[in-house]
Every structure is written in structure tokens, then in C-alpha cells.
Image (cartoon, rainbow, N blue to C red; front, side, top):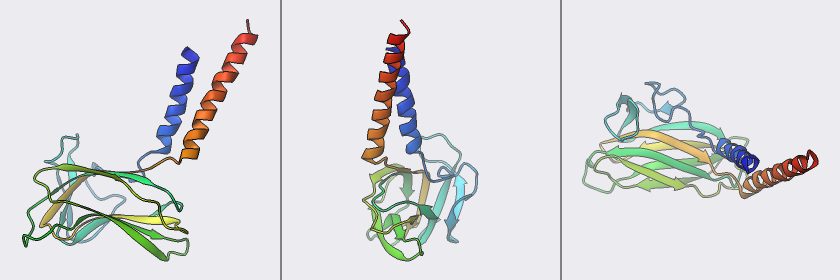
Length: 192
């Protein structure tokens, strides 16, 4: 029983490693925009927002963005996306257009298409979470962008983009765990 638990824990640790955050400095705790590209109306502020521990957040003024460019991927890959955000009232009282964009490219750098995920205006901090749809055929890389188009200001923190393990990978982890249990069982029987 003890061996079975150890085997399962090892398998789960591999599964966890497979879905690590691919965005560096998503919590801005470096106090700057290390690993991010940004437009001019973006700054780091003292974090007065979400309950998640930390000191800093990103502040975007209307029409500005932060992004991570040229992240490696394969066609059909899926990603779990999560971030905390807050917006100020709309400058014109209209409809908010702010959110995330995934722009897909092939190996030659040609644009293949994009996916947008737009979210609503907030009163206070909210957490946005979703899973992307599959990338177009031929995709080898993508840009991840967060943009405030219409809000006077938007604050972002705790940004995470995790690759969703494909079912085949999860199946292989399960088979490896089962094989380790069988080998361990045979070893313990032959040792008696």
C-alpha cells in the first residue's frame, strides 16, 4: 500500500510539472515588466487589489497592452488561462472591450489567426479563468496579450497560462504508474 501511494505521488508530480505556468513574472513581483513587452501607457503599481499575496500589479491606461511574444506551441494545444483584473468606469459610458488575445503564427512567422476573450467591467477585483480552443493547423508559436481598449484604467495581477496536458500524456502517466506497481509487486513476491 505504501508503495502504491509513492507511485501515485510520483505520477502526479510529473502531471503537475507538465502543466507549469509558461508566463514568467505573471505576478509582477520583480517590481518591473521583466519578460513582458508593453506599450507606453503601462506601469507597475503597489498592489492594493486581490487577496492573493504580493506587492505589485500592472496598471494599463485605455488603449494600451502588455504581452508575451513568440511562445512555442503546437497546433491543437490548449491552455488554461487565469488572471485577476479590475477596471475603472468606462470613459464614455459605453461597452467595455478589454481582455486577452491569442495571436497564432507558423514557423515562418506568418499570422494564422487569433482568439479573443473579452470580459466585463468590474467593481473591485475579479478573477477571470478560461480554457482556450485549439490553435489553427500549422501553428508553432503564439503571442499572449492583455489589453484595455475602453476602460479608463485596468489593473492586472497573478497572470497564469498553463498548457493543458493532452489525454495521451495523462494516459501514459497512468500506464507508467501501473507498470511501476506491477514491477514492485513482483519484486516483493520474489524477495519472500
